[in-house]
Image (cartoon, rainbow, N blue to C red; front, top):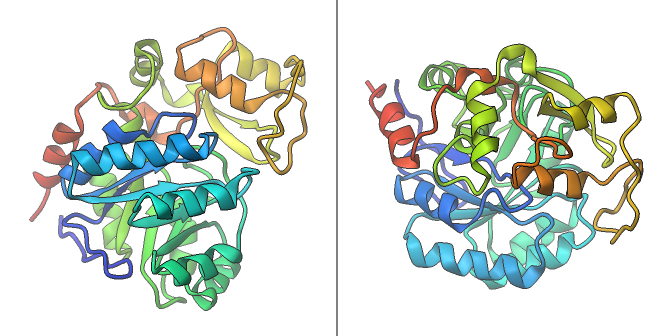
Length: 312
């Protein structure tokens, strides 16, 4: 495989690989710094974290690596702007944002000279992002993990978008193996974002039985569900996911209004937190559609080693 050069503002990682930001304390300092140390871009997920905790995680990660570090913050989060500013104050290298679209973040990025990378799922948003000053875009399809903005597969979106804008395009969705990475680079993208492969890593901050679910998952075990955020998501099939799909999930007994918009049919934050802790009965386990390709838990170092071994 031939690695393209990825340039985001003044940032040029050794390898054009971004670790997907997995929220609810999955992508924390340990995972992000390990990716940074291997020459990729490590990402801390800031959504659902208090601002001061996010700032602490960034400082911890910066103490563990000299590599490039970013944060991923969902626009849907009620404290989006506060998390954005807090990340910049803590010295983060770049901001990635999806699950909605913020025009203000580009103004903030320019003010503090921090690159802004929106996650988009349409040509329209890709063009708007470029016009507003995005340093790159992540094009994410419906086969990715987390909250999704489309049902179209990533490869279809890449073919529609990549030749129509002049900023770097980073592909995200169903990119799990070195072969998947190579296939995307052959389409002409400058980089890839990978969440699913790093979810099944030793450094991911999830319970062992969550990791076991990941490596045992078959293709048919990954199902689509509707989050209370109002966006679809891919998840490993469990009892609680089936309740959600059948509109039988219990309503929250309390709500801290962590999201700007929420159906409040159930609490996705609590369900994901339970999933991270390994609760197989009441947890939700987000993952990309390509999780079935993973059959073992690897360290970040070993993941990169296998990717680099494909370099030609």
